[in-house]
Length: 336
Image (tube, rainbow, N blue to C red; front, top):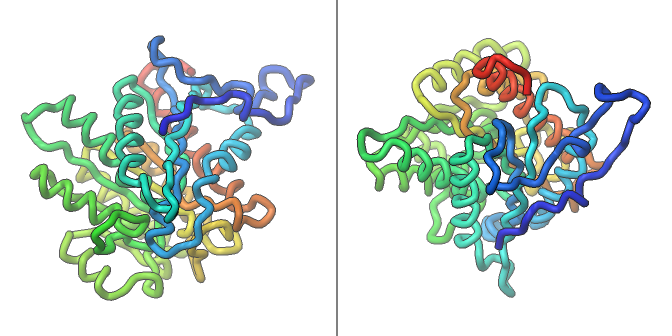
């Protein structure tokens, strides 16, 4: 079920004495009105769902992630990104087993993403479990298919910052299956499947998953190979991947971060990849000019400590929005 944006949820500190330079996100965000052509900007779209986490035998609670993330985004200082819209939430209506309705929610989310892209906006998804990824990709795929017709397949690259491949087998979709589902969807369409997973843990993926990744031609880099001293090598892997595609879908699973930074997830990382590596990767994708949508997944406020995970999630999404706004300025020649 789609719920409209509620600006009453956006509140925070007001530094009136600082003037225009003291403004924050909650003072700038607007409810998206699709009857009026919006200016280029980011559109925040919530995916209030953890049915996929439940199916994946994880710890539920990510359904409340979008609200917790908005609360942290509200106080971000307003910098380059000044065109911010709230497109509301897609809410998974769960049945008695806690899992029903997932497929419907993914399709509704896909439609919302497609609509935002059609309006020239950059969708930023607020998860929710990582089952958000299948809906995100479907929305982008539909948009590009409509734009390109049958002339040729779009070259979409998925960049996933994650401790897990999320390529699991299974009859029903879950938070562990989205990229396998995307691979199958690409095969059915006759499209190439291009997937780069950065932060993979040897101790969080079975050999069956590594074998499936090899068979599908996945590009990956392990968490233990992504320390600060190896940043240049990691950026080279990312650059080579992005150079081979035309459109990038960026997705961030918060369990890629060390548990001390992101305790509020279903599966906290025993090692993880630090922000001193993650943030330059985000900057590189945003600067590519090929980013079409992004989302952040697995924020579980019920497992969070002092809002740590929500705080870092807001920082990462804010960074993506900032980087994308630089690209808009380069295209338009003016600040928005």
